[in-house]
Length: 126
Image (cartoon, rainbow, N blue to C red; front, side, top):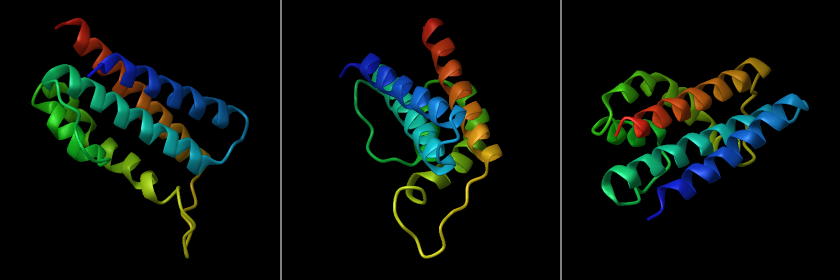
């Protein structure tokens, strides 16, 4: 498994989120791209650490697994729960659609960037 490919795909997701945000794109889709970026970065890190691709999309669960290899990632558990809400809710039509504010979209971008940065730092020290 090539963890770097997961990181590259994640960077495409975060760049897509930034472009949409800067051009007043749909805030829900911005958050979805952030969720995807974090998921791919965590999975890439876990491939690097274990040699195995982890199943699932739950950021809290993936982050907890990653903490076994870098405890610092524990600081993001609450953030993971926040971003997790945008995985399903923004992808399909709903009876009560999730309204995503510009502030929430900006916060998702901030979280994704911070997680990616922290994992990059962790990779340099290994």
